[in-house]
Image (cartoon, rainbow, N blue to C red; front, side, top):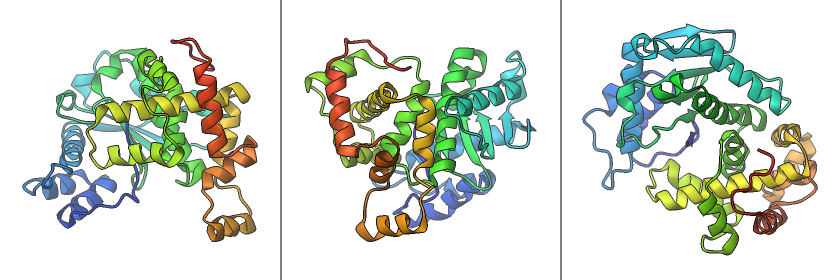
Length: 310
């Protein structure tokens, strides 16, 4: 369930224009520009083409409902018939997710229920994803989620957590923390990965190493094991934070990235301090390195399959 930011760098010049259209949600122009150009020597732009194709297919076949002042929902009517009032259900999930973190902000967002044709093995982000677009953020979810209330709640809550995070932190939050907070929506964690992380069979990555795994995913990395472990480690770290304080404290942490005075921001820039270090110390009284060490020690004490704070 990757996050895609507008600030992502693209090395291959031919892709800069179609991706720019894509990030403005101009899907006809994005699809036209992406069709017929190479996906890179190693296929690194193939995931981008598949996302553009999936969203373009949905836009060309579907319709957009303005649910409320901050939410639009895009569906293909004959593919979501029988799913009930999908727009209202999605709105309620978003409101509940924000309420859990005691967050009042409602970023403008579109939720697109992708064409059923897009739910295929060759689509990398078929489980759902969040994109930092203009003039709204965008969440894309699989068509099958519309007919499974538990799955719909899980995927929408996960991706909407990214939207709240972006709005509150002004994109200063590291990916490991962003994903860890979003993983609170997951119904369960992988007990095999839990055991591997606790015993050392899987590496317990340091903050920048963990963030690098998510950046590699955004650039088309296909090492599924490394990526899966990164999501699970992030989830366990945030669940450790829940043993210290409740979920509203995580909302406070997100806000801690952007509520600094001018002098504090200046100090962070001049000293090259990691914004996460400052926010964690402000809200929890501990830095990244200490958090990672404490969370790992706590995880090692938990029985396999235990899910604290979920």
